[in-house]
Image (tube, rainbow, N blue to C red; front, top):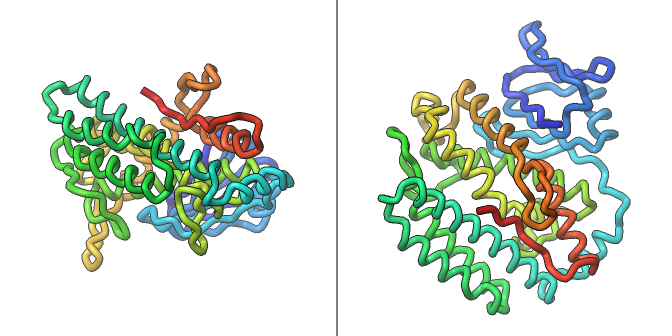
Length: 334
């Protein structure tokens, strides 16, 4: 199972029997069995046939639309699952509440510990790097999480830890032609930020699909406040996955020279930086490979892929809210 990415402008996504076909310029670009598809992401302009829309909805397969630069536009969402009890527990825990506080602690602890582990891996690989100050600041943000009793204060710790991590992110980049000074977006104005923004948009598609599959209302979160049209719970659950999925893919693409500065282009008016079509396809291959790679889940003690881990974490979240477990364990990987 995997995600079907459509990157060719003016292509046509159709259905023939039990297969999806992508055509452009009177040529078939892709022909894949439906059984192998668990998500579809369309970049730029493409036409999706009514038969495909019906098939995706019936199979509970999400279809997301992004601009050709990777900016998220929206998605076709299958009907919510019939598990009203999960949503009832989710709404019952709305902040301020002890369950909401517990979950926010978990999301932030998972994110910051994975930030710390990413820097430790960088330090093991390149001992000459000056990462200790950032590690110290991350430890200082992680240490008080369990004794912090307001969500706003926890957000402050998350901000402090993220600043420490991204303040050292440039040191993890080991290829000429790339540098990172600070996080910028809407639009990203350098190649590294362009890759991070694209990766987070893809991660949002995957995590929101998992949240929906388990039966949650994706718009009610705990770390992210409620805002019209914002899938706050999906964004909450994304936090622990950002460094171990997206940031890892970005650093791998750059440091392994899969992408070079020539794979990026700059829009002259907005100065927005995005991947060329060839670069986009290379990045999508890396992202998909990462999702399908396996690791030992630290809680379940079984092998799983990152794609499966999105749903596993969503189900662990549901178990906590339903009172079936005492804690929500964020995914932390060393």
